[in-house]
Length: 143
Image 1: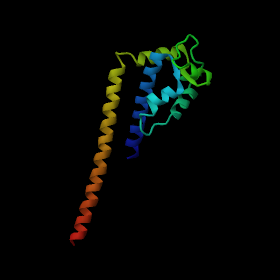
Image 2: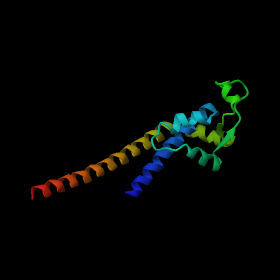
Image 3: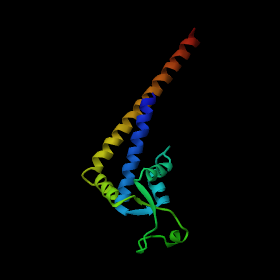
Image 4: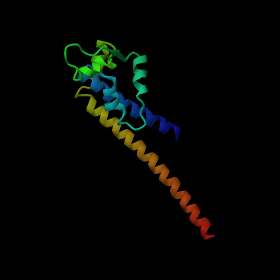
């Protein structure tokens, strides 16, 4: 029901957050559009507005592109593209800890397993309802 749907939504958001944390921990800063393409676009039903939520909560911040030549696309700098980074060095360290090889794989696996379990339960419920509807139709047509 609604509880399972809400739980599934929260789990998927947590998995996107973990993926986002891994990217920020690795790159430090990146264009907003790159984050959208890597984390939010592949996740069906996800909204890049989550980024704004993380900015509002002080986890991410908009920043200037690096000036040390690490930007792969100097044209994006000229175009004023928005870049994202962790909102503070402390949060970046927290992202790095979350993204560490000791933690990230087990968190990722646990989230993916739980998401799969809930999706299978939802599908099973849909199939059970459909079977009941089909059975009722067959009985009604046989009468």
